[in-house]
Amino acid sequence: AMAAFPERKWLFGAEGLQRADRGALITTAGQVEPTGQMEVHDGGARVKTEVTKEKKRQFLDAKAWEIAISPGKQFMMTAFMLWMMGSGVHIMSIIFTFYQLITPIKGIMGIGQVFKGLEDTARDLGADLILQKLVYVACQLGVLLFITHRFGSMGLLPTSASDWIGSMPIRPPAEFAAGGLPLSAF
Image 1: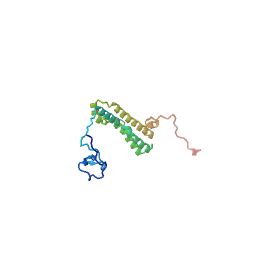
Image 2 (image 1 turned 90 degrees about the horizontal axis):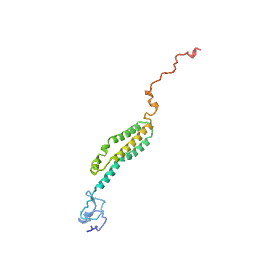
Image 3 (image 1 turned 120 degrees about the vertical axis):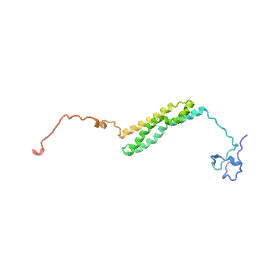
Image 4 (image 1 turned 60 degrees about the vertical axis):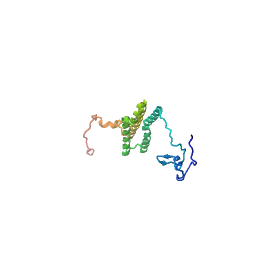
């Protein structure tokens, strides 16, 4: 049997409805939403949809890829903020850049924790998350490479010979001159 539509599609205020027709209002967690909209009343029968193993695997794969590329998504905002700060050496840019250097290192070290929520489901479904984990590590290494380049462009990495001048031995002089006559004596 086909469900019957109520006589009216819209109603402003539920006071004028018969008690039997109030069940046709759309309810979400006990709230009528949107106000007064009426839908087909099917007598409360619900159809349960079956979630297949393939759908679970597709969901797991989508979620794992979302986690895998998340460092790249987060880095876009970071790159914009670094660009806005400029390449000058001042305390805020050093602190912010150092913080951004630590973040990918923590991310690589905590890869097991990042994918922990998906591991059990992947094991049950026989899925492999190695590729997603490798992409995650590659994204983190890309961020780390950019931040290292940033430190180098700010002049905070010892990359030139003058940065190591303090550790070079002092050569003995080839010539030595001492004394002399004052010019006022002539």
